[in-house]
Image (cartoon, rainbow, N blue to C red; front, side):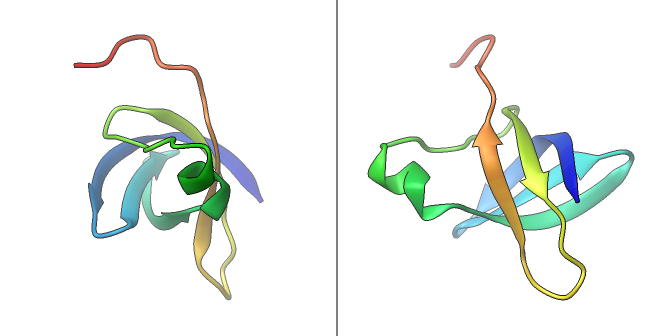
Length: 67
């Protein structure tokens, strides 16, 4: 199932994404590392939620701002 949410925090390669009032622990796809994209807190993302395996950040949506 694909959902859209916001990254709350990232720790050691795990990202905590809030979607529909639920927080999911996710890992980023390897393609982000190859494209030199680092998801940060506050980014809007789409994730695939899988109950039997780990959740994956599929896409980082365009940023509105970055400090």
